[in-house]
Image 1 (cartoon, rainbow, N blue to C red):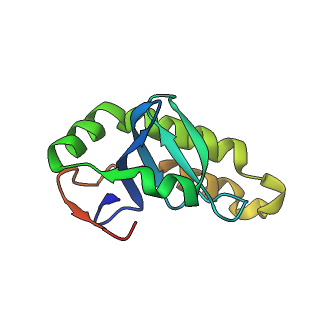
Image 2: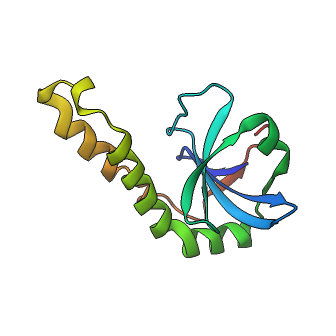
Length: 126
């Protein structure tokens, strides 16, 4: 997958028999089920849980131009979906009351807005 040097976020293309979609992976969003990952599917405009052993062979890196266009086209929708996911999946009773709101606010504001969208590198192993 292709990601920014200072980010846990990767943009790539998911190629399937039904068609191709740009997907976004944030390695900070973990699945409770081992062997499964969440990818933001831009065609479906939602986070989708995938079987990692199946989907990993169908993910392909974007070139620099495609990446820049994907960030431009999908970044705001992705951030909104991520914030909604965090709100829905953060269990307030598991966080002490002193840090609950601060932790949630920190997660919600961690939007990589300081990321230089042109500063990318390739991670061929993912």
